[in-house]
Length: 144
Image (tube, rainbow, N blue to C red; front, side, top):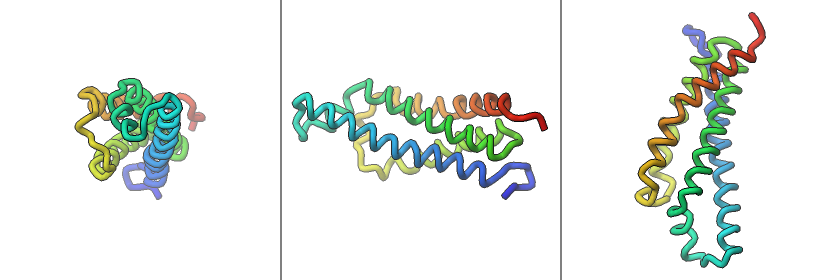
C-alpha cells in the first residue's frame, strides 16, 4: 500500500497504531501502578484522582511515555517503509497528535486540572521527536 507520493500507508498506520495503542496501554499500566503506590501510602480512594492530577511528576512521566511510544511507532514506520524515513515519521507524529487531541475530550478526565505546560509540551514535542526519529531511522537504513 504505497501512494503515488511514495508514502507507505501501511507503514504510517502501523506506526500510528504503536504510538496511540501502545501509549494508551502503557498509560493504563502507569496509572494503575501509580494508584497502587498512592493507596499503599494511605491515600484514600476518594482522593486518588485529585492527588494524581496535582502531581507534576505524574505529567512528566506521562509525557515521557507518550513521546517514547511516538518514537517507537515512528521508527517502526520508517523501517517498514524503507524509504522517505523522515516523511513517514513526520506523518506518524502529525496523525498521532491529531488522534490524541480528538480522543482527549472523550476520556472522561477533568482536563481543567492539567498543568498549563502539559498539553503544549506533549503536543509540541511530538513533531520534533518524530522527525528526529526519522533521521535516526535513516542512519540505520541499509544503503539502497
